[in-house]
Length: 295
Ligand code: GUN
Image 1 (cartoon, rainbow, N blue to C red):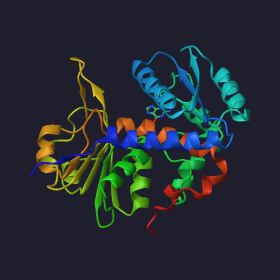
Image 2: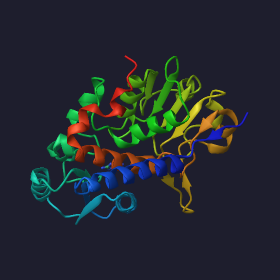
Image 3: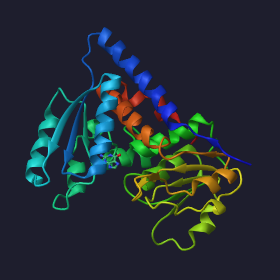
Image 4: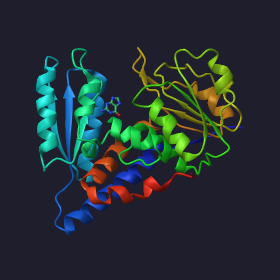
């Protein structure tokens, strides 16, 4: 058996097209474009690439991006003052604080300061709490991007065992909440998990978000499983590799995401979607995407 590829680039492109149309329709009603403030602190090369992609997606969809590139030496007080200003501004709908922040800044404190209604990353405890209580509003971009990809292949979720590897705040933990909400039985593996192979080999759905190339062996994959690779690492030869040993996993899975071109473009597309939702404040409680719970 060999797998079918889940084409994240194509799914993301479709979403961006729909967002562009919605923003055009808004403009016909006299509404200004949604506005996203993008804050990048320091010189992390990967963060610069992510932010460039996000700003490019803004341009493609008609979202206005207001860029705040800040030096590595920016103080916590300066960042607090900027976020308070953006929270108070009626011209800003969404605030993106690119992570990681320099070590002298308390990320949790800053993320909690962002107005939950402008929290387009979905990282604020309010938005995570909503997701935990099965009533999500702004949902973390990568996990909801994964759910959108799974929906695109008509994944069934119920009676399916989903195994997540990696328990980060950005991906693993909210991914657990999303898959639980969708109706799967979920296992979350992390750095203290012994014998990862034992868990992965039982998984109908594998979501790996570790950032260690090849940590998930193709031989572990259950025949017919769906494999989602969130990991993205640059090797010394400049090639990009995921967490999953792709060639051998491809022979066993039913569906698999490529790296690059799988989950990556979805994170950006969902960020644009969240920005549009944040700008359309009043419809927030009635978004179709918030009606997916089987409970
Ligand atoms: N750093 C890595 N992924 C993300 C993300 O999805 N959002 C933000 N703000 N920072 C990140």
